[in-house]
Length: 232
Image (tube, rainbow, N blue to C red; front, side, top):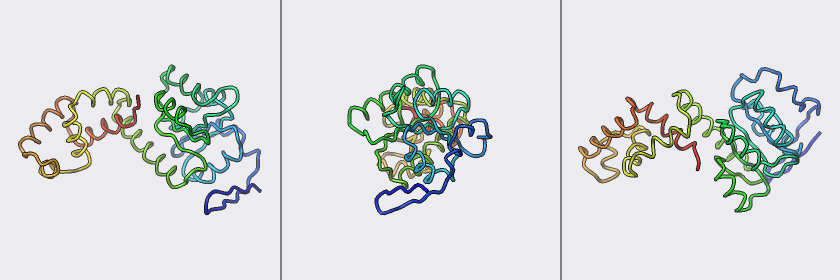
């Protein structure tokens, strides 16, 4: 029996250690979304499993080197990783993944949430950086949002970086209008919110649809989702 304590909550887990072995890699991971957790402390992995294990299929890597191998075998939908790991740390792992053009969302989860590490992680392409002890609600919401956006973008057949480059061709004002339209607002509502003329909004929308080569709000939303997934 393993017990973990986080603020205001105690989680008790009964598990067979052998179940944690990576023979899960050979099993069917197509049921739902799959997350690869790169974490060298077993108790931390078990805590994450208690929080998100019923929602997602989890794969476990003990270090960055193993994470690369598991990713190439299983192609998970998202990677949740620690920064400080033996053999290969999280930042080195992320660098390798970007060099090999692995198109997978990455979220850092670490007790080492210092500003330099956070800045470096974001520059290398991490989508977010959460500190331990983990806020279970925040983690669950973050993963859900990222995977939803990623699914919409990939369904449209466009990679996040491609979507971002396309979206940034728009002026800041047109980006603002496009985001409001993608959220379901009518052109009239956009005009009222931005305090501009309706015909001006209509002209902007015509340009936006032409520039992005989209024909519906759904297609527009997919590009915006992809642009939001991509990080400098």
